[in-house]
Length: 152
Image (cartoon, rainbow, N blue to C red):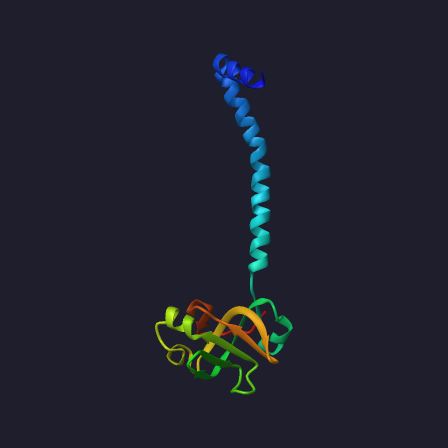
């Protein structure tokens, strides 16, 4: 019955029908905008990374961060590449790990050419592997070469 009233109203008074629809849409629009904005903000914050000092990296296990320092050595095996950051192996406070499948698929040059003895910033999930801190990287976009500044 309600549908017939609306249809009759639309035929007899098209301007009122459109206006009433627009009023409802305008009333709903701010709520949709608010919910969408809140969702995007929460999603962004949960995925956001922040720059942390290398010497406190072990406090961020399980968090996605950006850390910057010098590369002190790179070792490639049949299955994996290890990039020692902050000091030479075995004293490196961070090891960047790149698995062969990702290296072959995503990196155009060897890590030695790309990152050897250079300042870098790496972004990723901090993990603990047998008491050592590591970040596993699958893409060259996760590592930026160049000017490294300390966290603010």
